Length: 152
Image (cartoon, rainbow, N blue to C red; front, side, top):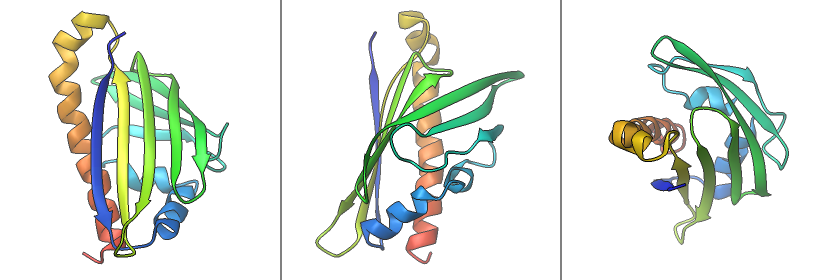
């Protein structure tokens, strides 16, 4: 299975502990879902520690799909990782990193490793589309965080 990588990073004007605390709120995911995406959170996680699960209903055109993610790593104020257990991708791992900077701010880094279903055919048909969609979704998510923490 050939995986692809996507990385988005933004400096936020708050300490990592503050940005991380926002992500620890069970309903933070709702604030980060773009309004144009047809999604609904079916199950919020109780926390973001190892074993926590999130279930989202998402649509591709008229077709609904359940996306189940499980948290597999957790380092307080620095990192949490979720992995797709069921959903639209053949593989999905999302590392959320919160790196302190010399200025006392946070470099928020989303690192995604993913593989599309259907192997080479999925890459041929959907590779560019998925990359563009990830860019748009994570641009939105990071803009929400900039507005929250940078006072924009």
